[in-house]
Image (cartoon, rainbow, N blue to C red; front, side, top):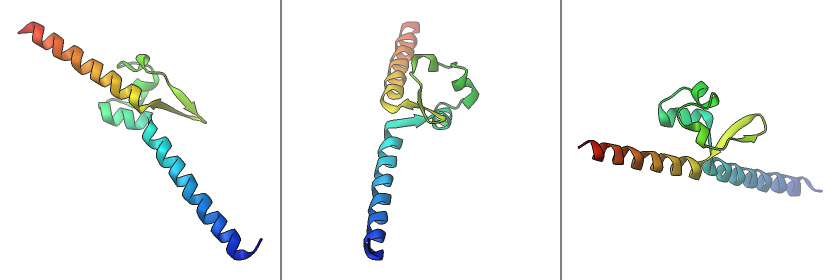
Length: 90
């Protein structure tokens, strides 16, 4: 394999890896991202408090992720539940 061919091959492989990483990052949410999003500590998520017991953890290597769409569905259900409770108190 020539030097130019090897360089092109490596370049396109790195582009593919970047696309895969971007797709994975948008599909999943990490524990630290979820902690910031919900203003709680990562340890509360690992301890399965704050509603995280309703979410299915996915292990990717040594890290834990959650499906972004599952998190968003949980948040929407929680918001509607809070809205119903608030409405019934009025």
